[in-house]
Structure formats: C-alpha cells, structure tokens
Image 1 (cartoon, rainbow, N blue to C red):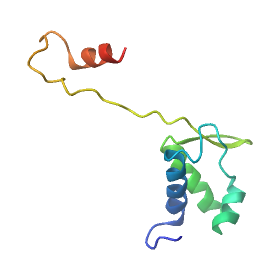
Image 2: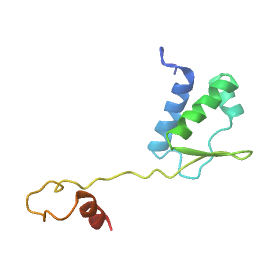
Image 3: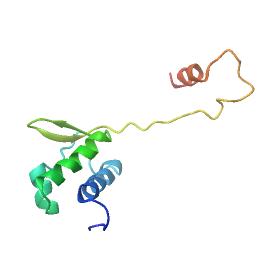
Image 4: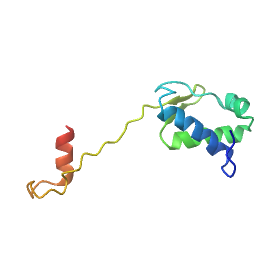
Length: 104
C-alpha cells in the first residue's frame, strides 16, 4: 500500500526491511531481481535499484553481480554495560577490556 509523502524506493526498501528483520526472508535467501521488483511494485528500474541500494547500505543484503541480492545474517549488537561505571570494579580495568573479557 502506498504511503504518501515517502519516496517509492524507500517504501519498497521498508517492506523488505520488515521482511528481513521479522525473519520472513531468511539469511541467504535471494531477493527479487530488479525486473521482478519493477513488476511487483509497478516502478521503474531506477526506483527498484535504489531500493536495493538502500538495503545494501544498511547492511541487510549483499549483492553479487549477475547472481542477485541475498539476505545477510543480521547480527544483533548486545551491550552488557550495566556495571560499566560501577564503583565496585578495579580502577585499573578499562571499560573496553571489561566488556571484552565478559564477551569472551
């Protein structure tokens, strides 16, 4: 469904972003080609290409020339820094070293 005021390429990228982050498209799964996106959304090649570029720049997909675009594995960044500024830890330990030690 079109969202007024938002460029079409961003709408398409948004649709596929949701599918990727919700797990509808699994890591390694192939995205539709530019031609398929053109037909599905009734847009020009430039719009389809820009939508793919947005997803690639966000690190959600990887494109291989002549093969297509594929979903990358999304690595969630988890910060365990609740005790970073705690007064109980030794003053000689840096916050980076403490976090690195905890994460292995």
